[in-house]
Structure formats: structure tokens, C-alpha cells
Amino acid sequence: MLGEAVLPVSPHPTTAAINRIMAPAGGMEHGTARVRMKTREAFQEDLAYSFRLLGLGEPGTEWQKRVQSLTPRDVHPAGRPHYSFLQAAAAGWEETADQLGQDVLVDLNGYRHFVANEKKSCFVDSIDLYYSCDVTEQGIVLVDTPGADSVNARHTGVTFNYMKNADALIFVTYYNHAFSQGDRQFLNQLGRVKDSSAMDQMFFVVNASDLSSSEEELEQVLDHVGTELRKNGIRSPRLFPVSSMLAMEGKMDGNVDRLQQSGFMRFEEEFNQFAGKELADLAVGGASEELARVIQRLKQRAEDAAQGEETLRQRRDELGTISEQSRLRIERLAQRSMKDELSQETNELLFHVRQRLAFRLGQFMAEAFHPSVLREDQGNLKTAFAACGRELLRMIGIELEQELLATTLRLEQTGHAWVGKQVTECINEVKQLTGGIDLSLTLDEKWSTPVLDEIRLEEPSGWKNYWSYFRNPKQFFEGEGRQRLQEALEPVLKQMMIEVLPTSEQKLVQFYDTQVHQSVQHHSRQLTERLEEAVTGIQDTLASGIQAEQWVALSEQLEQMQE
Image (cartoon, rainbow, N blue to C red; front, side, top):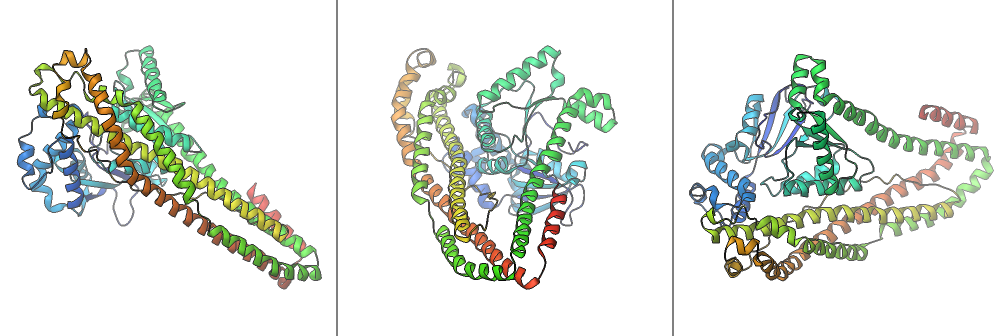
């Protein structure tokens, strides 16, 4: 998309922080980057998060020595990203610790070093890369977010916000990549955002399509990816097989045939069509609606002027009394509250969250307590068993966080619908009171997403009390061991969810109650201004002496512009 080999590429994940790529601005030159390092507090939070997930307790002052003594065999496969993070942090601490909390300005080589070198990237919070090319010079900002399995707990909410508010979303998967549990959670969130959006702004790219040996094989892969996407909540995905390698060669060499062969041109054409037309049409549509309201007000001026001075004076005097009643009605709108409805809606939504997670407990158990982890040649099976238990809690905790973020979408829709109903009722009543004054508004507010606390499920008295369910791998996986463990854990896990959700529930109700209150206050001010403008308009028509024909001509000019 950038047209040159700008970003570092690796078979291993290289995006550990939020990367924003944009046109040069704020005195920053082309090919430079602003690297925001984590604060010491944020780094300590990430450190503690990884330590907890690996069953290591709190980091303490000797955390580097403790990390250096770890081996991959001590870690559940799902915890390997955290193991890698800790190893990189320990190795890079002495060199990078003094930069924490700072902004570091670098050139392109320095940028690549911060992104691709794990000993550096693990200390980075976000990076703004200033790069001039066709895409960025259109005003487009590309945001590269960490993958679905990011070790940074904060990325869940940050990525969700980008997912929710971005004008377009591009999900890139690899030709022979199997969807991980993290991918599936990520896609489910994408599906929820897609369902709540008024338009389809998502593009799904299957990279490395040049690995296919034939068209038939490529079609089979695309069918498989499409099936997986639909299975995980993405209905009617727009799929694009692409070879980024061939596309890069084609762009840099100016080889149109290679670019065509890469499949990238089709993706780029559809993306540019979306960005250049569909998004532009949205903006034009909003401006057109506002212009229509101006035209309506001009026509009202023409009607007022056509009534004659005496009728107009009488109308003005009547409105002096009626407008006070209208103001009182608008004030009542500003005092409306939906806290009771929000409390009930949130309670019901979280009840269903607990139900869904309880229903999927068997799936979580199968993924956490896996035969590939609990093997006779694994070494200390008791340690591996405890690691599986921690992985189970991690999965449920992350799923709860994802469900809570999805709940914010539903609460936001509920809040918008309630506010819209209240405002519409107020506008209609004012229209009746004033004999036809229309104060219609465009209700297109964007609400932020609440910052929710990390869900922490405490280990149920360690895992030693449950070790008796595991005698050997054969008994556990082929016999009744895992099923009996699930039956023993189910009430404990359900109780954990019951205990951990009330704090989030309270925050959600409080947050959206505030959003609704601010929204009705904002719309009340807008309606009051429009009412005053309508009443003042009659006075202006009286004072100006402008004839009805002139108001009509002006409205017709604007209508021609609108066309």
C-alpha cells in the first residue's frame, strides 16, 4: 500500500505496539518516526501480567534472574508469547530502562530497529511513522495493530476502539495459517462490530497466495478461509488472495504484469473505490442533509415574508408566548434519565454472557488441558497440569473481557435508540406547539468506549486439589479424567464469573448513564438554539424588508448546488 519496502517483515510477529503511518506533520520530516516508550508503571503492569499468567507470582526486584532461569518446557504453549516477552525484556532492560516514559525521534533505520528487535519493541507503547506516499497524502492514516495474541493486556481495548471507529478495516491472514484461539476471538469481535455498522468497511486479505500450486488449490484455501470467517461471526466476507511479495516487486520495478499477477490490484481498486466513493458519499450525505435544513429555513422565511407585515407581527407575538412553553419542553428533555433501563439492560446482557461462557466451558477445557501439553515425556506433569489450569483461567478471563467489550456495543446502540426517541418526541411536540416550526437534528454522535479493568480470575486454591483427577494422560484424555475435572471446576468457575462481573456491571451502567445524560444535554442546547433562531428569524424578516421572492430565489440557488 505504501509502494516501497518501508516496514520490517518477518515470519515472526513484529508488531508489538500500535503503529500509525501518516503524512509528515507537526514539523516531522518524511521518513522519521516518533517512538513513545512505555512508562515505568505501564511496563511494570505488563511484567506483572506475564508473570501472573506463567504462574510466577509477582515480579519483584530480582525479576531478571527469575526470567533467565525459565525454560520453554516450564511454559504452556499458549504462554510462549509471554515467555518471549519476558526473555526480551530481561535482555534489553539495562540498555533501554532509561528511555522509559520518553519520546524517541528516529529515522527509518531506527524505526525498523525499534519494531523488529524484540529487546527494544517490548518497551515501546506506540509509534507514529511519518511517510509521504499516495495513500498518506490523501489524508489516510494507516494503523497497524498488534495481532490477536498480543501479550499486552491493554491492547484488547485499544485495538477494539480502532476496530469500532476506523473508516476501513483490513484483516490479513497467511495462506497456510491455521486460525488460533486468539484469531477466533478477534474475528468474533470483528463480526460484532460489522453487525453494528451501517456499512461494510471490512476487507479480508489472504497473503502469500503465490504459494498455491494451482487455481484449484487457491480456491480450496479461499473456501476454507471463508468458512472459518463465517463460523467465527463474519457474514459475507470480502476475500482477496494477494501475494505481497509479487506486488512489492511489481510496484518497485514498475512491472504491471507482476502487479496484476499478485492479485493486489483488485484489492487496491476495491479499497480505493470504498475510500474514494463510499466514504466520500457518507460525508457528502451529511453535508447534503445540513444544506436541506438551510433550504427549509429559507423557504420558511419566504412563507413568512409572503404573509404581510401585520400577520407577521401577530405571528411573532404568538410565538413569544408559545416559545416559552417549547423551552420548558426542551428543558424536560435535558432532565430525562434512563439509568433504570440501563441497569436492567446491562444486568440481562451480562446474564447471557455468563450463560454463553458456561456453555463453552468444554471447549475451553479441551484447548487448555491438551494432549500435546500433558504428555509422559513432558517432564514434571504436575507443573504442566498447573500451567493448563492457568491457561484455562486466562482464556476465560480474555473471553470475559471480549464479551464485555461486545456488551458496550449493545449498550451504546440501546443508549442511542433511547436518546433518539426522546429527542424525536420533543421535536414533534415543539412542532405542534409552535404551529409547524421544525427543529430536526442529525443524531450521529460517536460515543467513546469505557476503559474496563483487566479480568483477573484467581487460581482456585492452586491446582493441587485437582491433581487427583489426573492419574496419567491415557486415563485423563481417553477415560473420564478430563470430564470429571470439568464437572468439579464448573461450579467454581461459574461462581468466579458471578463474583468478578458486578464491578464491570457498575462501571458500564455509570459510564452509559453519563453518556446519555451528556447526549440529551447536548441535544437540548441544540434544540434551544434552533428555537431561538426560528423566533428571531421572524423578527429579522420583519426588520429586513426582504421580499418573499428574494428568499425563494436564494433557496432555489442552494437547491441547484445540492443537485
